[in-house]
Amino acid sequence: MYDLLVQNYVEDDDAMFRFDYSKEFLRWALLPPGYNPDWLIGVRAGPKRKLFGCITGIPVTMYLNGREVNCAEINFLCVHKKLRAKRLAPILIKEITRRVNRCDIWQAIYTAGATIPTPITGAQYWHRSLNPQKLIDVGFSSLPSGKTMTKYVKENRLRSLQIPEMRPMVESDLAMVTELLNNHLRNFKVHIHFTLDEVAHFLLPRDKVVYSYCVDGPRDSDGKIPVIDFFSFYCLPSQILRHPEHKILNVAYSFYNFVTPRSTQE
Image 1 (cartoon, rainbow, N blue to C red):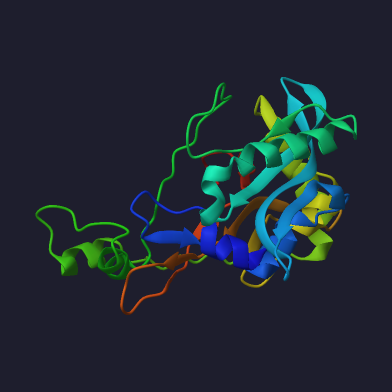
Image 2: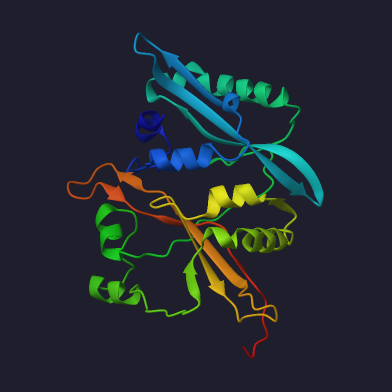
């Protein structure tokens, strides 16, 4: 599956970058607690049984306007470039729909680069350049008009930020992070509800896959140190397809985050 995706999955319009999901990332994304192996579908052909197409689903518990709904989260629809005219994608979609329906689940969530009727929402990407010189060199971004490279690099330089109470998430944080995260997500009309096991799977740090950090508050009356803020990001590099020097573009994507409201005096 890694080989199929790394050669045929999502590219930008100019075919300069393509997602490069690692094998560890794919295991993290596709094998959560309660996953159904029947929802990981591939199409093979030839004497070597090479993979030419895939589509995947994982079970998620959604809340839609306060109503709990069991859903499938669909991802990684990919067809080999040589078979794009064979109408394989609609067959894959129909097959995973059939398998999900057999589990008495009738709703699915998914994202798409193009607008498919009828979307429930849209998303805007916002970037924070960490290495602007490389990004401009590979064509990911361009130098703003009227600015020199030296000035632009200086403007995007990371400032030192010291938060003594900030630390990587550990297993003992699971119960508190699960409760606080679900409380935060209830502010939204459409949101996932996480179990303790799902938070452990998706948010406990994994090197080069996902990173999570907690900010500790003051010790409470019981002597416990509560988590008051939380942030996480996952790592998804892209191949740089047409550059003589640079081959990989490392990107951190904001994942789940929450803060505990505090008075302005703190």
